[in-house]
Image: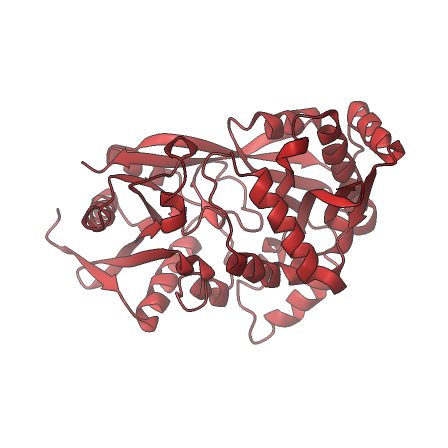
Length: 385
């Protein structure tokens, strides 16, 4: 370990602010990165505000060299993740690292060793990451696609980070993909035929979310999500506090005609959320609401014309997933949202993901709508022996 490198354990509000600002400085130096809102980043690492900490604990670290901050990392343990089956990614003894930034490989090694040592002291036997902090926030390291700016709620990392992590003894545990879709043109004929068959099915009703009832709709969506994704690799259930918190956070970027709930016999069984890419305006205001950035933000939120779109989440209750109706539900929502985005907001591009490499259902949907992989994220693992 380089004697010039010292490690600071972060334990207070001022330290968390320096931790966030250091990450922002690294992002500013990374090509095609998009500055995020500092207030949102601070909230994510604040145990008093992020409900993730209701079932998790974390330690943040900053590396210093010659008196200058040169890197950062988090080590964290999610008690709910420890309760999951080991063959689903987490399980007993699995801790995580995240918020990884370093100026050079020696600093990276020191930070990774620090995170590993902290997790060992907490009784962990395996480390997984980068995951910052929750699997529902920013999972994975960008390993392909650095030539594109990230879309809303997606991480962005320099290509050389992967080599440093792998050199530290980590191997890839899972790959996550995002898919690029041209939404200026109609979907393939097969998709349209399936969507039309759904429209003729009297048992199926696809409706927009209702902002006036958003709290109830958000709870419905996230409850479907907990069921639909429960067998997926990396799944950790959202708690009621996280459901409420997520609903509040998502409300400003919800456009009713871009988010759908599908019902069968009047019962909500599937959903699809689509968000305009807020990174478009964040780049213009350099991630700063004040003094005048908030004006651009409000204007954009009202009508995000010409914006790219991202589908971060969609799901169908497990009891329907292997039925013919599953494709009707999925393609019906996709078809409606694509049409609304293209005709009302003049959007031309959408991004689907992230999608697990072995999620056969979602990969099949992505292939059927003729989308193509444009970004690849890796989650790494290593035993803590």
